[in-house]
Image (cartoon, rainbow, N blue to C red; front, top):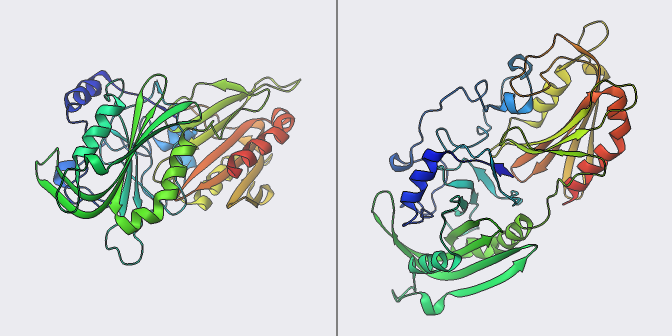
Length: 393
């Protein structure tokens, strides 16, 4: 995952770090929407056509994208939030099945989820990933701060009852705390006192070679008991090697923007003038329906007669583990932009695209391999294996 931070945002974050703003709104388990205290700034540019937009990230010219599914949440970071392009984050935060991915409420949240309540609980739980570049404080300090936010049901300090642990997960060290009781703390924005009984709090600090990442999960006890296994798996998978590891021969490239999860060059076949490319896209909160993306990909190609090639495109669904992956294979003259922000040619002949939609909880990954037909044919087996291995994780 790649994200980045402006100098102005670093300054604002540093001021907030004495509080380490991992606190939630007074309505502890409320999901969706935003209060006046967490209202987002207006977007600086149109989310579908401006700089950093989904269209730009996908390398498409605006006319190539059909109307978005109105039921889908806007992808990307919050309006007016931090620009994280340029800071390397070596963790993989994937959406567990059943979790609801939400738009982060502020610029300090990398990911935010609602954990649906079990029968008998009125409120959902929550899981939030926080990142404070180079300024998050030590794991011990944050664990103690979290412990200070909880009390026993009788109102006693939680310290003696908190279950602390640390362990190696992959190449990282993970510190954790598990507490059940009353969530009792002051909201950092409003100052309003929170006092929510019957709460289970699972907190994690992931130490990487360069920084710390904070995962705060809390909600009604029964709901959190139900999701505790998924939370542990979420942490384990975050620290595991990337599911999008390159195949032999792929040329690793720095993603052009934060909506590109991974980016590779595909060296050209003999006789081709250009290399191919393989890009993995991810938009937290969604990027339209699967059918809308398939139609957009196919709509970027025309045949020798200048007509669309919808009937000639091969669209197949394949069950891989617990996921149903949709593959798209289409050839002809390509009419989309090859790079973000680039002008699309009238038609670039002799191109082929192999693309796939990999469901991931309520989100999805979008894989697109594109280039001269002979080059894509040379790499076809590796492209398909790349997608299948990623989907199997």
